[in-house]
Every structure is written in C-alpha cells, then in structure tokens.
Length: 119
Image (cartoon, rainbow, N blue to C red; front, side, top):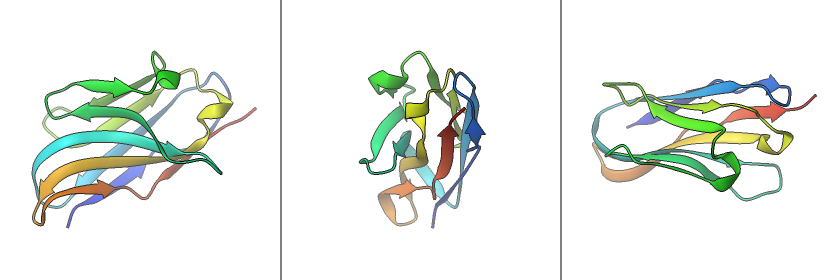
C-alpha cells in the first residue's frame, strides 16, 4: 500500500515563499504523473501543477511563473516551490501520484497540508 506524506504548509504573508514536499512510502514500480492540487474553502479541488514521468510540467495559469514543481533526483519525492504568494493561494494542498504499485495502476493522494497567505 502506497502512502503519500506531505509537509511544508504554513501561514505566510503575501509576497512570501513556501516549499511543500511529498514523500511516498511503499512499493512503487512506476510513476506516470505526479502533481499538486489545492482546494480552497467552498471551492472545488483544482490542479495546480503536474509533472509527468518523462519530465513534462504543467501549471494552472494563476500560478505560472510563481510556482515550480520538481522531483528529487533518484527518488519519488516531489516539491512545490511557491513564490510571491497571494491571499488567493490560501487552500489545502494535496499531493497526488498516478502510479503502479502492488495493486496495479491507481491514483494516490496525500492527507493535505494547509497553506494560508495572510497579513
């Protein structure tokens, strides 16, 4: 059973920076997609950034040029570097991985980490 453990959420002032991390545990044979989603209070969950198995990245328009998704070399740990944070970035951020584990291909989600941008 694969589990994703996130960390890094915090309270930060507008214009500040945070880095979220997501480390999977368990048996992983291959990873197709890794990504970060977020859900603000009263809103639907949305994709923020994704990283494919071949290294392609994708960002939602509102975070382009401010957020960077990356993967630690040789591991399945991913990061979300967030710069110039805005109040509208306040949300619970979830790590997601589409991977092949012992039960085949499936989507796995972390427990979520709260990011609050406020002065």
